[in-house]
Length: 433
Image 1 (cartoon, rainbow, N blue to C red):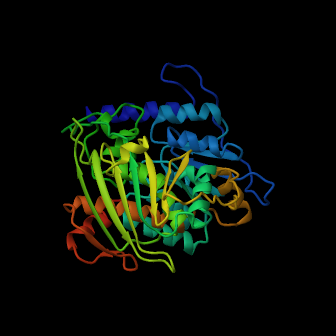
Image 2 (tube, rainbow, N blue to C red):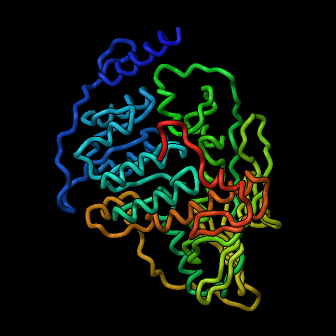
């Protein structure tokens, strides 16, 4: 019976790829792309897209000016929907087959976190440039491997922290770096998202359109349940990293950029599970990182809060999510689209003139950099350090909230041997990085 179900699922999936709907109607014919690789900044790039829905669809729209020659997704219906918009793109369930093509210039990876690193690594080893969604990978070790591969192959890379391209972030960075607040040693970042409750089951049958084994990839096998896939995966440590991994790269990007932060010295996290479901990620969480002094800039204590937890007194600011810089001369509150200064009594604002050029767009910046070989603002070196720092918060939480001493150069926790299993996870057989 199991083989019959698997056989029917494969038949229906292949029917979608062949352009025939489950009801028997004809979909637009799918043709393999024949465009040649771009040879100058004026030519369009040949792109392969891994993950075509949700963030994948947003990223597809962001690079739609280029030649979309290949689409890959483990959900046949999502793949078919994307093919309606890009009917000349070749279709794939398995990104490994897509990456065997010899006509690609670059790829866009928009899969769940647990399958970020492997296609990204394969693409980099193949000499391709890569745009990958945040938080770049599932584990700290994976992020470091991807960073190393990007450097070794001199790839043009960009992590999907799209808000980095916004004008407001640039104005905040200018204010901080101009010294309007004086020296800054304290930053609070809070984010009010809630997790979606899910359940574990002993057995489950995936829908016909979903290749669940490919979806699992390197993750441990878990019986299928809808609360594991299609965005819900974020709320299980097998597949994602909770709200911290989902949102911290966006918000912590601002203090990292403004203060020139790199590797932390220590990290400690605490949290609580608050959802009605069986999810293992915390609904409320606080993470504290200590960063060293940088030149004349003092050490920085940065704290992240999510769920209903916020810093003391945060209610006066009226923001569900925000970044708060605390300096010698006052405070600066910012979110994606706004900023407000609170200077000490007697001090006047001295807002610097804009000096950081406005972005041409997060995706367009990467596209132009692939053509010109110029660096991007969220390349894997800068954004990789940010992602490693964020993911270390989950490492501390998963070892019981102990403060961890981080040795970034050796990629290890100095004072807690058990933390190693969360810095580098085990892989399902056949899916090693």
